[in-house]
Image 1 (cartoon, one colour):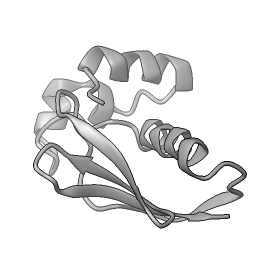
Image 2 (image 1 turned 90 degrees about the vertical axis):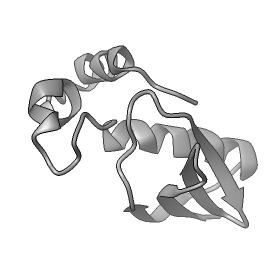
Image 3 (image 1 turned 135 degrees about the vertical axis):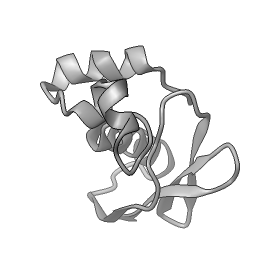
Length: 102
């Protein structure tokens, strides 16, 4: 999956989270991230969607860890390895990981 800056703006309007690191490209360029990043709670929706596909009846996600920022314009995949979900970028780098409790 790949999100655009427009997708991030739509999520900001839906969630009410207009933190400039997500929506203000000029501001975000001055931060340690060097550009805008996807909202953590939007990334969590990817994990929940994948959890429902691979582990129907799962109860919770624990140990959610953001290792790298998730950025607009980059292709990502959510993978499952025995209940450990990861968001992996197009270079194979793990950006987010979480463990499912079944």
